[in-house]
Length: 294
Image 1 (spheres, one colour):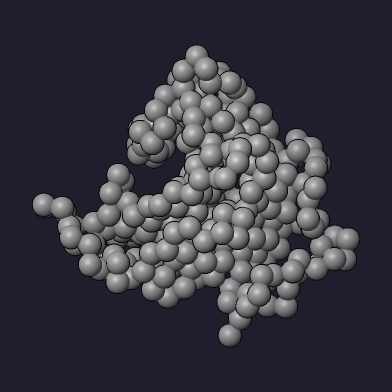
Image 2 (tube, rainbow, N blue to C red; image 1 turned 90 degrees about the vertical axis):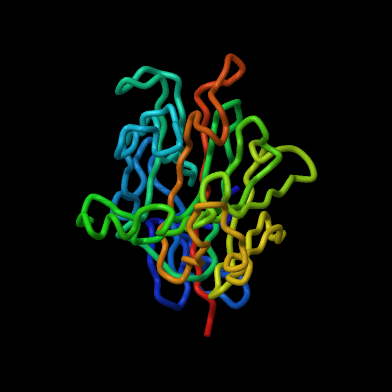
């Protein structure tokens, strides 16, 4: 059952947030809520498009979003909608659309909500299946978008913008979640990563809370309150670069925006096979962001 209800998405600078029922959303100790989306609304409705921008298609270069993904992202209710019970649905489907064999959804808060440091968390139930790739993650706000000038786009290109993967799950290994950062000198397969294994069952069996606590010089990853990974500035700066690679840099001292998506295929998970069941649905109960209190 959903822990709190809210009528709309909210942004707050301080003072907390009150649910539709009048019950406040209680922040973790030492934090104050700055953003929340509880995904309340009518079944079939889109999420608040004043908050979430839609990523559509196969990527700016048509290459599967740089990962060889096989889906076409859409903004159709078939792929992205509220379920009427306080959840957001991101649904991967096996269907021909836009020259691809699969469809799905990807959304971001770039330009609408961005924050430097704090606690970023979501309560999610992931889909399962070979080749299914659900994720909750962040990119630096200098990552280029449709408003960027060519010069801005060059300066903010990945991985220089920085990437913080709060949750990535391979659909064929749903008991494992990975937390990773990608930056100059440690991107792609060389990202700094750690995994957490559920003691019982898989992340597709029920909802779990995935979070990072990000402070100057340190990022920590949690699952259901359990700390399983931590990276510091010192660790990044002491990495030994590969031959010909960029000198590793810490690029986590500016605002980042949020992303949610379900990819199909790509280098991280491989392609779907005959065992993969569609539709594959990720349910998001809420997304909440906090700042540390002074």
